[in-house]
Image (cartoon, rainbow, N blue to C red; front, side, top):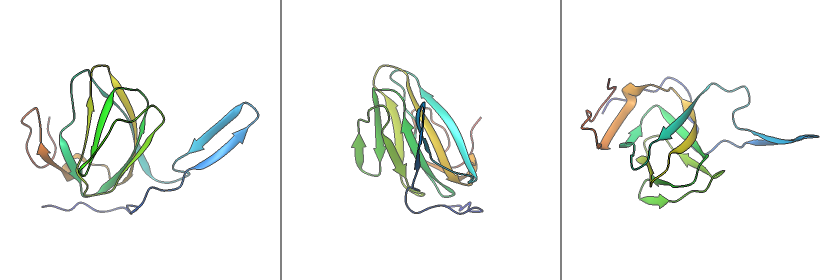
Length: 132
């Protein structure tokens, strides 16, 4: 297995700071840290491969109901607003039960497709690395 590690990866979910303002509030997940933020959308009835990454850990912030998340051997049915920490080298998967499901992903480490290992994939993509 190749290891791609060029940036620090936290072992545990970094603390988010809560900031109160007169108009409401916000949570700050990565204050002045180098991260990659992605908004993933899984279409109805579809799912990501069961995968892991050597070079990054991920914080998933669920935006929509109807998703199923696997982290290691655990299965979650998260509600909007729930946060899921996925340590580096941990198998994980996101699926939609019937409506589009959006998850905001904050990745800590070195985001690159080359570090992916697929253990199960509905689209017959290669076990290792980037795909078109």
